[in-house]
Image (cartoon, rainbow, N blue to C red; front, side, top):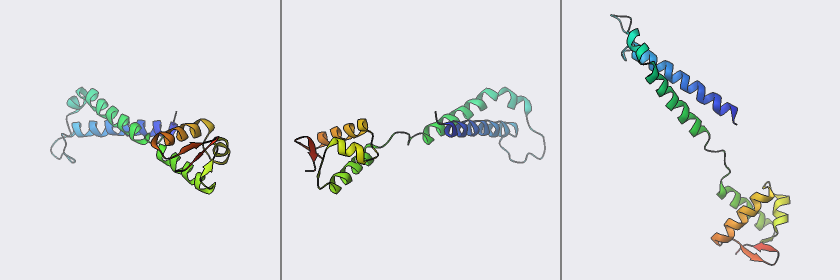
Amino acid sequence: MNLPRLIAAIVAGLATALIAYGVVLSHGRPFPLHRLGDSALAYRLIPLELFVGLLVALAVYHFFGRHDKPRADIQQRMVQRFAYRQGGFFTLQQLSEASPLEPAQARAVVVQMLEKGQLRAEGNGYRLP
């Protein structure tokens, strides 16, 4: 679990709920001069204010988590660069040992590139077309 992501979502949700409470309390006026506010209405609408805070917390959690998964295009470019450095031909073992990709990731990227026609299988290795 990504603890900073969770903490940011909780703080954003609670802050939004508190702001919503203040907006309801003051009827949306930033400086109510003629009266103090409607605390009974703000109290009755606490579930709505918490719901708005929950929506913001979920949105923050979702948007800060979009980059958890490695992008396939970045991995494919890594394989292409590695292949160019090897003269266009490489084996899966060479790729796994010399790149930051784990063996399972390297196999998955090579299979994707073979399906797209970005690599050709040749003997016990792979070659750029």
